[in-house]
Structure formats: structure tokens, C-alpha cells
Length: 361
Image 1: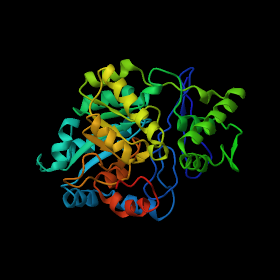
Image 2: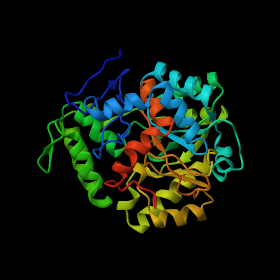
Image 3: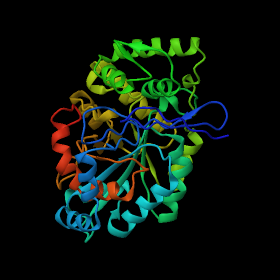
């Protein structure tokens, strides 16, 4: 059985997909570059000038101009779950026609400027290890002859446990009656998530534990969430794709103390090596850069580290501070073209980065 819930919020489109217990949500936090409110997947503003501007920037003429004007930039695209196979297929067709889709092993050369090409370069990445990446995206990537990198949090691999933000979003989608600092979860989930992100990590964990206890007492199914399995990760790498470190359980490293940062990185690194899926890449959860983390990444032999700041990568950028473009896998072609061409980040990205801690130093 498959069914869908849509939250009645103007800026939030939230789906729940269920195929028997446990539940499977689509909780990617791809925040729209035109705003500073953390939102769920499909965060395009539906009204006003930003929507019109994105449509104009996504025209075929603007796309051609952007690809030419910013040809030397590498586009590292950050995706999350894959709720619509048709839209992802459309995106991959567009990229295959107009871009050179890189393997992870080719990224450093492209950033250094030593891998010349007449087409702009793109590296595809998927954050959080949602099962749909391995079940939906993988066959599409194979069909198009492309590869990608999936950044995972091993604490939930092979479990039915949600990451903290998946718990919050799932409880909101279920309409759980819970209030956090005057914000009702079912009516203002964005404010709740934004507030939790701003807390020191130990305090954020306490708040999420209270939510989990409350949800369990009220029989809320959001306390269970089907996650990817180790077998799926191995199938992903067997097909030529790579797995990257996304921390142990997705805290904002900028809100963690040094000891916690080391635990998050080293424990995940050891797990990836133990299971034979280590690739030497890392993506900061929510793009929250941390100087201690960067030093540890060097010690761990990581060669590429990614932010989440909605920007293209200029040639000769620091490989441990690479920017990424935020894109939903079910975005329409106009939005996909506006973002991958480089126009969207230049028009909206600078404004958003002024009020965000996702900016790479």
C-alpha cells in the first residue's frame, strides 16, 4: 500500500511513503537558496519574484549562456531522496547532454584545472543515505552511464531508526501534538528545526530524546523509519559509485565540542573502512564547517570535503572546502537548469549566504 500526506503549509511540501511497517519518509533538508528557513525537500518558493526569476534563469537561452560563462566552474550537486524517478531521469538526461559527469576520482583534477573539457563538469552527490538513492537512483545512473557519491551516517544503516531531523519531520507529518518553545510542531516545523540546529549539540540531543519519548507514548509511527542496508551500500559501490563520510549521526559539527567532533569523524571513518566502502570523501552535515573537523579529515586521509552553501566550485579551490549546489531530485527542468548552469547561485546564493552559517571560509 502506498499513500501520501501533504502538510498544509505554504512553504512546506511533505510526503510520506509507506509500504508496510516501518514507515518510510522523504526528509531531505535541501533549503532553498532564496531564503534562510530550513525546509524539507521540494522547497521552491511557490509565489513571488524568486519563482519568476528561477523560471527565467531556467530558460534554454539562459542555460546555454550560463554554461558558457561559468564553464570553468565545477558543479557539485547535492541531492537527497528520490521521490520522483521521472524527474531524476530528466535531470540525468540534461546533464548527460550538456555536462561531463565526473567520477569521484576525477574531481580533484577538475578542480585543479588539469582535466580540461569543452563541457562544464558536474559531480553528483546524495546526502543522508535514503533508501530511494539505492533503489531508484542507482538503476537510473546505470542506465545513463553515470556514477555518484552517497554520503551516509552509519549509526542508522541497517536499522529502522530515524536521524534526529527525520524524527522531527516525521512527527510533524503525522500531526503529533508537541510544542517546543511556543512553536507547535505540526504548524511550524521549520521554526522547530531551525531552533534545534542553533542549540549546542548535547542540548539538541536532549530535546530530541524528549520528542522521541513523547512520540512513543502517543504511538506515533515516526519513531520508526526504514533506512538503507549495508547490502545496498555494497551494491552501490559494486556498480562503480562511492560512499562518503557524513558523520556518525548527523549533528551540526559547528555546535559540537572537540571531543564529539572527533568521535563523529573517526567512528564513521573506521566503520566505512571496516566494511570496505571508504572512499576518502566527506560532506559536512547541513554544511556546518568546523576547523577541528578539517584537521581531523587531513589525518584520516580524506581528500575532498564538501559544504552545503549553494555555490559552484571555482578552479583551484581548497579541496577540503568545496561548495555544493542544492537541488531536489524532483525539481522540474527549469529549476534544474537554473541551478546547474550557475545562474541561480549567483543571483540568490550571495544573499542567502549572508545570513547562514553554511558559508565555507
